[in-house]
Image 1 (cartoon, chains in turn yellow, cyan):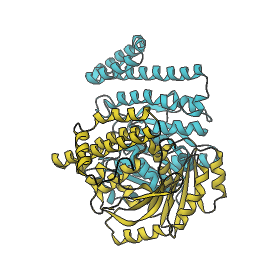
Image 2 (tube, helix red, strand yellow; image 1 turned 90 degrees about the vertical axis):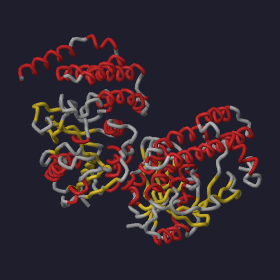
Image 3 (cartoon, one colour; image 1 turned 135 degrees about the vertical axis):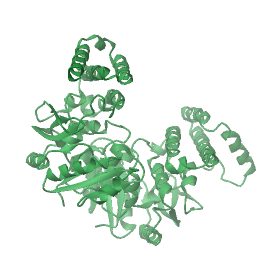
Image 4 (cartoon, rainbow over the protein chains, first blue to last red; image 1 turned 45 degrees about the vertical axis):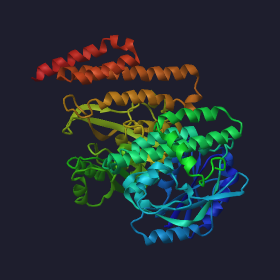
Length: 304
Length: 307
C-alpha cells in the first residue's frame, strides 16, 4: 500500500501533465500518482498512456475540479493525500520532508508550505506565504486562504470525519476543505517552498483569474462556515472580526484584480468586480484605504 | 477483497439500523457492510459498536445523505456498490442475484430490480414498484421520472460510478436520481423484474417526510434542466427535448395533486396546500383533471370504512 497519493486533476492541458507527474514522483518515496482526466479531448489520454506507473482515471463528463479530485481520492489508497494542479510542479524530495514533520505531530491534520510563484514564462516572482502560521488556524483561515493548494499534505483519516470536497463551490473547494479540517485539527507547516506555481493573468484562461466569481462563491461559503459548530459556539465579536477580515481581504483581492485587468485593457471585469463590493461589510473600503495609507511599507497594489 | 460493498448512511435511528444491516448481510455471500454515521448525536455509535463485522465510519460534521454515501464509497473496497437506507431492507440473496447479472453483462453500468412497498412496520402494502422498462438504454425514461430507481433497488459497478462522478451533495434528496441519470447516459442498464428490497414508505399520518416530498419534486423539476444539458440529451432534437420536459412536469404535477388528495382526509392541510401550490405553479391546467378528486373521494371512503 502506498504511503502517499498525489492527485492531479487535469483538463485539456496535455502539454503540462507529464511534467507535473514527473515532479510528483520525484517529490518522495512510496508515492502513488493518480491522474484524473476531467473529460478532456483524446490527447490527454494518449499522453497518460505513455506514462508508466500512474493510475489514470478518465471521467466521462466534466465534473469540475472538486468532483474530479473527489474521484481521485476515492480511487487512492495512500495514508496521506496531496493535490497537485497540472500546471504546477512539486520540488524534489519535499513530500518526504513534509510527511516527516506531520508524523512528528500526530494531532495535526494537515501540513502546508510555501509556493514559489512564477509568471507564465517561468520567471520567479516571489514566494508565499511569508509567515507560514501554525496551530489552530480556524479563525485565520476564515478570513483568507493563505494556503497554497499544491503544498498541502493531509491525512486520509480527516476525510472520514469531515467528508469529501464540496462539489458546489467552484474555485474555492480547496479553501473550504482547509477550513473544515482546521475546525477540528491543528495545522502545521514547513517554512520552505515545495511547489512552483504559475501565476494567472486575466487572459490566461485559468479559473483563478475570474475574481468576481470566486468572491461570489466565497461569500456564500463564508455563510456556510458560520454554521459550523465552532463558529456557532463563538462570541459575536469573534464572528464579526472574522467577517471584517474576510470582507477586507475580498475587497483587496477585487481591487487588485481590477487594476490588473485594467492594465490589460479589459473593462467589463473591473465593473463586475466593483459591483460586488457592496455585498461585503459596508465599512470595508474605508478601512482598507486607511490601512493602505498608514502601512506604506506593505506590498504595493501595483506589484501584486 | 469483498465483491459487494453495501453503504448504509445513518442519522439518529439506532433502533432501525440493526435490522437493515442484518438484511444486507443475508442478501449476499461476499458482502462488506459500511455504516456511515452522519454525525448522529444519540446512541447510534454505541449501537454500532455492538454489531460485529461492519465497517463503521463516523462523520463529525453532518454531510447529508449524499456526502455520507460518498464517504462510504471512499472507504469501500468492493467491485460493486449499493446504497441502503437505514430504514429499508434488502431481500435475502438479492445482492448475489444482481452481482451475477453484472458479471454476465460486462457492458452494463448498473442493474435495477423492483421494490416491495411497505408501511412503517415493514408490512407489505401489496404494491410492488419496478422499472417497467426493458434492459438497455433507459436514459430517457429516467429523465422523464418514468423509471422507478433508487439506491435500494440497484447494484452499481464501481468503475462506472467513478467514470460518471460521485454523488452531488447539493442535490438534497435527489442525489441518487441524478447519479442514475448520469450513469444511464453513459451505460446500458440491466433490468430485473424480481423485487430486491423492501421500501418503508412514509404513510399518511406518519409525519415522516411530510413536507419534504413537495420540495424534493420541485428540485427534480429544476434539476432536470441541468440533466438536459448532458451531451446525449443535447444531441436530441428540440421537439424531443420539449417532450421530455413536458412529460416530467406533468408527471410531477399529477403526483403532487395525488399526494395532496391522499393527505386531506387525514387533516394534513398544510401539506396538501403546499403540494397543490407547487403543482399549480408547474402546470395550472393539470389541476382541473378529475383524477386527483377521484383519489380524494377514495381515501375518504377508505378512512370512513376503517373507522
